[in-house]
Amino acid sequence: QVQLVESGGGSVQAGGSLRLSCAGSGRTFSSYAMGWFRQAPGNEREFVAAINRSGGAPYYTDSVKGRFTISRDNAKNTIYLQMNSLKPEDTAVYYCAAARSIATFGNGYWGQGTQVTVSS
Image (cartoon, rainbow, N blue to C red; front, side):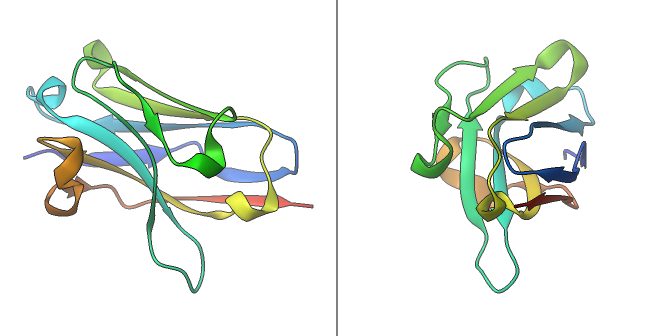
C-alpha cells in the first residue's frame, strides 16, 4: 500500500509558477507509475500528467504541454509537477496518484489533494 501527501499548492497570478510535490510512503514507491490529476469546481477529475516507474516517458494532457513538467525522485519517494505560465483555467484541486501502470490509475492510490488558484 502507498500513502501519498501533496504539497506546494497556493494562490498565484496568471503567468506565475508553482511546484507541487507528492511524497509517498513505503519501500515500493519506485514500482508505481505516478500521475497528477486535477478537479475544478463543478467539473470531473481530469488527467494532467503521468510518468513511468523509472522517470521516463512523461505524458501530458494537451492543455498543459509546454507549461507543466512532471518528474520523480525515487530516492526521495517524491514526484513533482512544475507548473509555469499558469492560467486561471488551471485553478483546481490537484491530486497525485500511484498505480501499477499508467492505464490503471482509477484503481490505484490517491492523495488528499492540494488547491491551486490562479487569478487573472
